[in-house]
Image 1 (cartoon, one colour):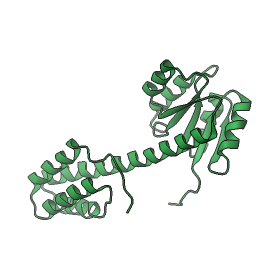
Image 2 (cartoon, helix red, strand yellow; image 1 turned 30 degrees about the vertical axis):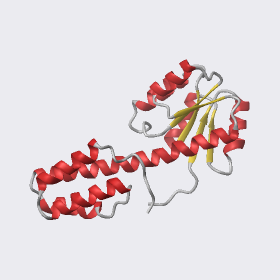
Image 3 (cartoon, helix red, strand yellow; image 1 turned 90 degrees about the vertical axis):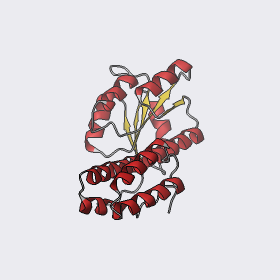
Length: 208
């Protein structure tokens, strides 16, 4: 698969000066696409890989809440993180943003440093969530293989898990799980997988 360069951000806002201001903040660090309406945004999303969306909270025809609700119900778009951009930094707006599925929000007029810090944080957490989901998926299939006595499948997954570097606590239990797989202690595998999930050892990712 071809490796992409800069992360791509889509800015959706019906206010042209706001679009211009946000583009100036983002260009240089990110690939930026601009949309002055929801329909234009959908067109861009259907043709361009997007890593994050900056979304106006209040737009005509389709509000930011309606926009993100549609995204959440569509498997094609639901993985894309959204940061709301709003003129109203009230508790009510904050609660609506969080409950709708937005990762964060910034208040207009946007401060460049605040916006860039929030974007970096959201993108970093999105990577972490993706890695966590992949790891949980592997553990799920390992559990199934062990319960069905499919040793070849279980050992193949264990070999893959042995290469994983997540964090100290997680890596330690993964090592123990793999050991039990190769010793055919399948009941212990299930116990340790449940232990890993129960103790929520996925919180912090560390690099190799």
